[in-house]
Length: 190
Image 1 (cartoon, rainbow, N blue to C red):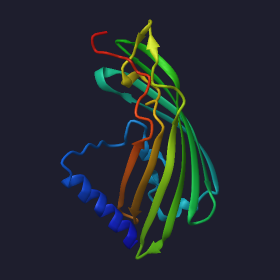
Image 2: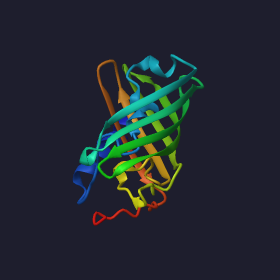
Image 3: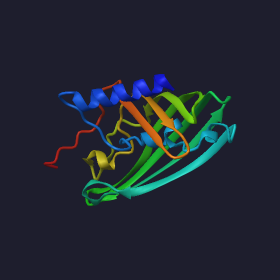
Image 4: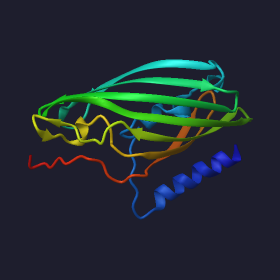
């Protein structure tokens, strides 16, 4: 528990006092649905040894682009300390520049849960995001901006920590691209 709290507060301190820091809610890749970031009860790590889930997310993005992001997720719990997860996503986007669809990303992650301490549970997530395309989908022969793309097109390293009890859940994470570019060539002049 102490290690998790120290890591959490160091990350917050670094974020708040850096000369330049950027962040966002769930990340473009949907980080908040991976591994331990969507667990809200202490028993959720041991409820099901295996679980297959269908994900049907949708919403409105920049420039009123409608986005539908289906996915299939498999969870396997080895014991109270270790679990793994695999998820594959897709995407459909429609807006004033056209329609686009395709496979998204493959997520692979492992979660280690520290034994409970004073009703608080701490868990650490490590994983990767592998693109299933280069983020270069076109419509009517022209490249589309990122809100239409089904993948960011980068290979990413994922790491995070979650601390929670029956009433509260605190999570923080980092998603670090290991490949810095994708194949998107959209320019606003188009």
